[in-house]
Image (cartoon, rainbow over the protein chains, first blue to last red):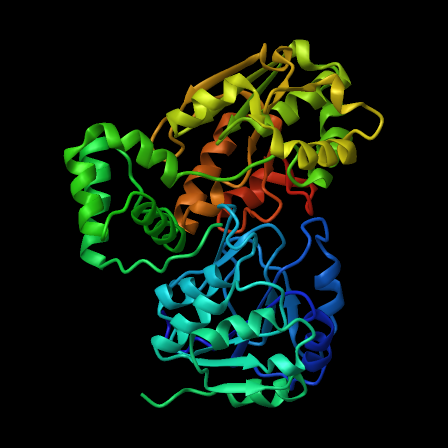
Length: 193
Length: 278
């Protein structure tokens, strides 16, 4: 892992997360030292539509990564439908068609666990509105190994099941309303050891 | 329901695993992409009630007959009939017509897994009238999947998805022309496999076959490091006749293979169909 690797956010969500997330990211100032990985559950036939919805975010390059795409700063990557998205310690993505986890492919747990295995130097994990508990374990493990973690306030989430599942496991560093997401992202927080 | 496990695997135990695989069983997994290797191993511990990587290594050393089961679990990749329908539409419309004048069409389906995509290809060749002139070599590293594929029988729960995919690719053809229900299974017409030979073959270590008009290798390269992808793609270049076609997964790329830039021109870059230059 190169030491100049960008701060990497993994943002997980499913039902009720797309529209507010897109709205929040539209207000995010460009940062070449930040990479955002969106791991959103979606229907498999919607191959390009979501990427299109996120395409125009000022300054940022938005892409559905191919397998072995190098992970770069200033990019927002959207996990492709019907693949798991894994982070490799060499600094690129791998895709996988292994079985779904929590009926989900991409699975947020899978992406978060791969980040931990890769030992990415600076990273944070976020869970948004969603309909199942995928991501709760992944975020909890990120917390345990020392990454920053945050969960959308269930009262603010259209579908609170996903944030609630995480809060049942542990108390993350921050519980926030989605309107404050851009501010949270720009801070690139690193919890004290 | 499948739950995710975070395996705690020491680098030294992983090294021992690679050595056992190589020295005892003749498989080299060192150039498999690491994240997925760790994930598979973690899943296998859990499934077989093993406490850690050391225990799995011991079992692989002492119990030779566990290896086939292990390999099957390790290499499992879920496939489906006409996965990525738009890619198969592109194959049908942009590629298969190129072969109408051919006396014979030799096709290598590398990483055929449980055979759903072999059937997909056979159905399209049948529909366009090329099947009688086609010879398909369907290969896989895993002997267990090679026992499943020739039966062309799948759990009935897949029917809805397979039928939906089928109808997107062949909207004017009834699904029942090629598949029927039998008990708890979806059974495909055995005629589709008449010109198919299923063979065990390791893409990493075995010599490639040669003189193919077409190679399909979908969602296999994703498990390899960039270096290994480069080597395997170069094997494909050698194995294709000039003008031959390569079809890879829609999220795979030839990015890491320098030689591919000169060797291939894209026929459909979104669906990842390439033609070997003369």
